[in-house]
Length: 253
Image 1 (cartoon, rainbow, N blue to C red):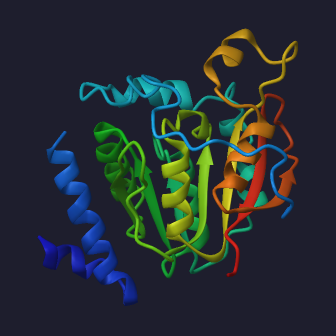
Image 2: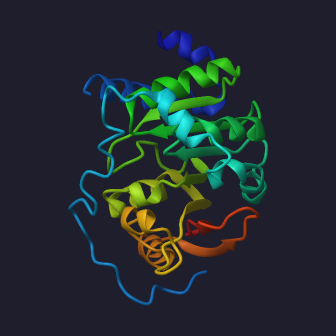
C-alpha cells in the first residue's frame, strides 16, 4: 500500500506525506504587525463544547452537507471565484484547506497550484475525509491529500505550507490556541493564514449567527495575533455581506 502511495507522490514531500497518511489512518481507525489591544488569556479548555458534535458523528451523511454547503445562497459558495482570486495562488504552492468539508475549495486549489503543487484537505470528520478522497479521484487530482485532524491540531509537519485557508471554520475551533499553534508551525516563514468567517455585529447579524459564532472579527484578529501571526489586512470580496476575509502572515523570523 505504501508503495502504491509512493508512486503518486513527487519530490521531497514523499516522506512527509507517508507520515501524514499513516497518522491519519491510525486516527481514523480510532474513531499588520501592531500587538493586540487586549491580551487573550490562554485557555486549555474547549471554548465552545459540542460545536463539532454533528461532524464527529460517524453516521454523518455527506450528501446532506453537500446540499447545505454547495448552494448559491451560501456566500462562500457563490463568491468562490472572488475568494480564489484574492488568495493569489501560484503553481507549485503547498496549501492546506482546514475544515475542507465537501471539497469545494480544495478542488479549486488543486487546479490553481497545479501538478507541482499540493493541497492538504484537512478535516475532523471521517466521512468527509472519505468523501474528499473520492472527490479527488473523481477529478483526477493526484495532488490532493485528505488528512484526518484532531480537535486541537491540523496534524501537518512544520514549515511545509505556503498558505493555510479556513472558510466558515474558525468559529468551530474548540481549542483556538492549540489549533493556531499547529497552523503556525505548519506554515513556512512568511506563509499566509487566511480566515473567512461570519461577521458578528449586534443589530446587523442574523440572530442565529449571533448565537452560533463565538468571536467577532476583532476578537479573531486578537487571538490570531496573540498566537504569533502578523496581521496583513482585510480583502473586500464582492458578494460578501455576512462574511469577511482577513489575512495573516507567519513572521519571517
